[in-house]
Length: 220
Image (cartoon, rainbow, N blue to C red; front, top):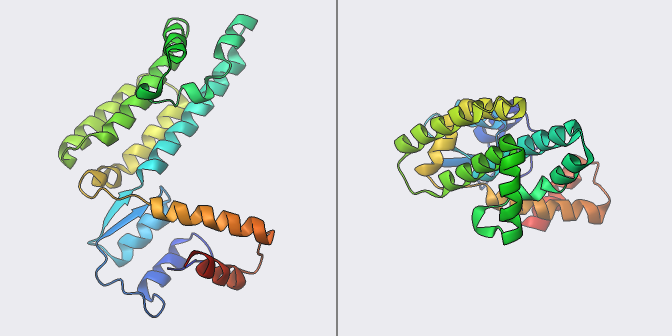
């Protein structure tokens, strides 16, 4: 539809208030967005009755970043070579869904549960959030179970995980809205992938006006 020059609320509000000719927003009912506060605030200031849905993949991505941070710190704190070896290569295992685990993965997770129960619990929490998104339920129940997930996560006392829980709490309404309006920003992420290809081909496009036209032509 369009490309804006920055991610600020003022810019978005201006665009939503006066979109380009041919773009009709009068029937807008739902908006899927990543966890960028200015997007949420901008939409709400113009369309107070629109349902905003926090994109599930960005929520999970935030959790993955927290897990990576915790894993790296655990590796740095390892005191023996055996412990360092045991923690090596956990990057993808901790993000793997239960149904995709190999026998070797299961054995390694079992050993991790014995040697580093907090890291194993981290994998369980990640799996629980994945399963939470897969359940077909009503928003009221999803809100209750999300609150329970947050309580369970905070019990680990990990700074990165607590920071993620703070994000969940500040975006709770928009996250839970997914269970009433199951939309994502997957289409936009697909366009972003095409745009990255365009930028590589062009070796960067410093002029915004030229960049906008190239993107609309390339992705239109």
